[in-house]
Amino acid sequence: MEQTATQTVDTDNAKHGSQPVSRADRREAQTIRIMEAAKRCFVRSGFQGASMNEICREAEMSPGALYRYFPSKESMIEAIAEADMAEDAKILAEMVDNPDVIDGFVSAAIGHLMHVHESGNAPLFTEIRAEGMRNEAVCQCCEASMRQTSEAIFNYLQAAVDRGEIKPRAPLDILLPVMMALGEGLVLADLPSKGIAISEIDKLMRAAVAANLRPVNRAGQV
Amino acid sequence: MEQTATQTVDTDNAKHGSQPVSRADRREAQTIRIMEAAKRCFVRSGFQGASMNEICREAEMSPGALYRYFPSKESMIEAIAEADMAEDAKILAEMVDNPDVIDGFVSAAIGHLMHVHESGNAPLFTEIRAEGMRNEAVCQCCEASMRQTSEAIFNYLQAAVDRGEIKPRAPLDILLPVMMALGEGLVLADLPSKGIAISEIDKLMRAAVAANLRPVNRAGQV
DNA sequence: ATTGACAGAGCGAACGTTCATTCTCATATG
DNA sequence: CATATGAGAATGAACGTTCGCTCTGTCAAT
View (cartoon, rainbow over the protein chains, first blue to last red):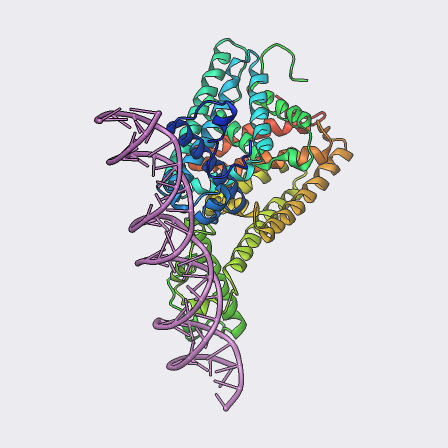
């Protein structure tokens, strides 16, 4: 995933037989390179703490070049927050396939947890949350992603209610924000990095979710 | 709680019959004034985003004066993080009195939640978490407060286990971090500000906690 | 195929501003 | 009088951003 390339990205790939890299391809590759570098800097120093010089150094690029891709530092922050949130929302939305609603819900949360843990993006996630408290654009994109996720889960759970599989302890529009807040706490704490096994987290979370969604007949309550 | 005082704090209180305010008293009052002002600025702009000028303006004090109380911006951040964390830990530790362990646990979490909500410190809390990811001193004070809280709860729960009142679903040293992460998520989300009633949060949380602590005989599982 | 003009990409010095901090001096208190 | 406290201008560093410039690959016209 890392690149040691100079500023030429992959010009010499052509010599090795790859696609001849069009203008647009190169531009996209460079944009990604900058965003990856910026992410690393933001994780290390925070949105406001990371300087454009630091980002330039990390991306092995001059300020003049970097500013051809992003018109301002603000726009980079927004782009990264948006990409990160979109990625999270996408992962969470994938659970809709699982027919067992408790299992689907829990494993989506665990999947999200593991993804953030493995990508080392827990600090970035925290940073985005903090920035969203005062930056209008970042706040909007957080809320948009949250709303999107929330709606997907809502429909998923509502269908299970309609099918008579669960009998939630509270109306879904109250239960959902509460459950999402719990899940977010779990993600932010990054417990796997503190040596706590996923299987244990899964077990405890499953019990908590089952206690609130209340599956009607099948096993699961212990 | 707000002060409209000029830079004289309460010199003229002496004329009205208050204590004659010693040097030390005045110094302490000024220190508190600066910290309150700084907290407001940090909530508004973030640790790195708030400038010393902004803090000086908020505290109605010149830079020269302010630097007589704190040697650097860093030291202000550390002092505020420490004070905030200590306050949180204190509130959470108070639950140890409640003989019903489920109720004690849940109402401590809810109490913490309400305190952060009412003091409007949710953004500060978020900011401290983010800063703790990269600032060694802030990280240490977060961990110290966490450890303190964790130990208090551990002993509280362990006693209940020994008394045979609960039968936790996992060893306490695993269950505790997980529960604390969930609680922190709840605090950070500041759900009351989104119109979700405390009674609902309490109900859902109680069910989740009961499902994991598993009280042995009395009512509570529904 | 060769040429020549052009646009995109990159560089790095330089800009004006703002930052945290310090200095000097005045005032007020014990 | 000695000392603590405060004001506010001054300081140098660092910031985000812009500028003028070069280099290079693309492509139409020849």
